[in-house]
Image (cartoon, rainbow over all chains, first blue to last red; front, top):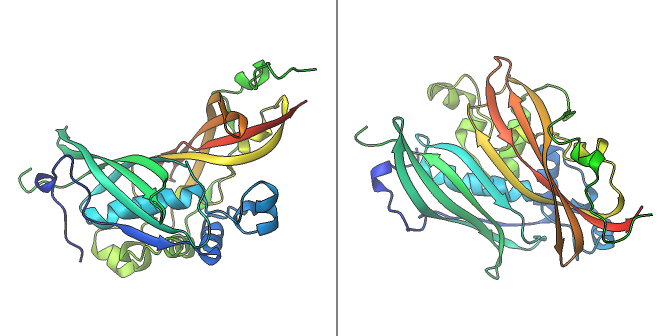
Length: 145
Length: 161
């Protein structure tokens, strides 16, 4: 069982004390393609990818959004709920890229009996280039509800 | 003959905003598909992979990871109704936005209903670009809205037609 994070423990401005780190491979990209059945050739056919200006096949954007979701769910524990997540795909990622998913607490508030936390989240590569900046809204259990 | 000063967004295209378009038929959520998605992100959460565990936590079966509803979703569906006044030089997936309302379980049947909600023209380093923002609402077999997905597809404009 993972540890549960509680609303009272959240400090606005702090970085989320968890990271997801994954190194992309052609295999990992193809696994994602098969899992969601997105077979656009740019994700597995190097010749096709090069013809449209990429140096190699690229990861699917939604794959990065899913890794950001994993970051939040692994961190907050099963008692937390992911309500919203969004991210923009600013840079392409290629096999060999080491993706690190990080987050920061932007705000916390209670409304209608739920305890919400707004987070800034992003995926960066091994050079610190932010490939997918985004934001999320989660809710957490409170020790004293 | 269009000139380069013409908008990438025609009246025909604007008229498509808000109209329902086909984002695929209802589909059953399969345990194997849930496992494949969990494995594709190295997210080995027992809620996705171990039915006994999921049941012990009060769920009706294994839970689908976030983003699952986009399984086999035809992201290019708007191209079926938008008549572009330009050739597409290339296409990119621009952004993702998800709202989640209910858990999705193996055995659920999800129905996608979608529409184009915005068309935006921008100029960038790759040239003139059209952003097509869609909204797909997923409803389960109990008529509960489980998730709303708003993907943005970007089309780089080539030659005008």
